[in-house]
Length: 286
Image: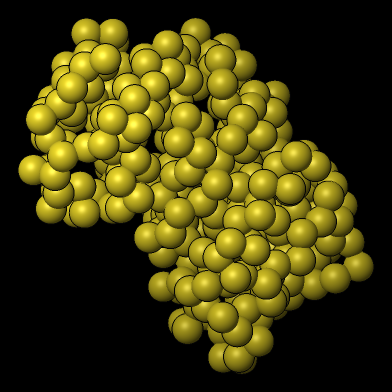
């Protein structure tokens, strides 16, 4: 058993070990946050703290597990999204920072587009519930429905909603099928959008652990956008806002789908923090 003088020494060992094993050294910090039950800034404030033997053993166990190929978020059982901690396991995709921008972009458009208080939002393919729950907690007046094709994913999302005290109506079903007969003001979705032939370029950590049903889609990754564009006119109000995360090469094609379905809408392709086209917003006016 390696005995570390303090948190800083443990992080130095873990970072070096992970790099030597072809993994991201940032996983060391995520594992340490979990061990200490604190945030990134909390870890920085406790670099000189001495770890108990139990903490050292658990930390080493997490680092070894991640080095073997399991995503560190699944190892610790959680991931941060929009300033909150979400339970994640192999039933759901690990929330990405880029998706936070979909939430922020939606919030920034609400006041401009709508002049009523109570709005109905549907998050299609909710996974961990990160988008739906974040929207509800940031905009408490929203009435939020979240759907997913996976029963296991919905169970995880339900746990997150309970932990974070967010009232969400979770429904099992494919795309808009659980929403038929209702009308919504806001539709958000981060659907599977990776083409199957892109798998060869992807990290083995992602391919071996994250649910393929949440990653890959037919028609070069575009099938679900096409289906949503076809199905959404039947369930959206006027005005309405549709926000979608996309693959960075898919903007023009996805925009075309929605322009065909909503000819009078205003459609914008927005870039993410890395400067890549990552979101489509479709504003449907009265």
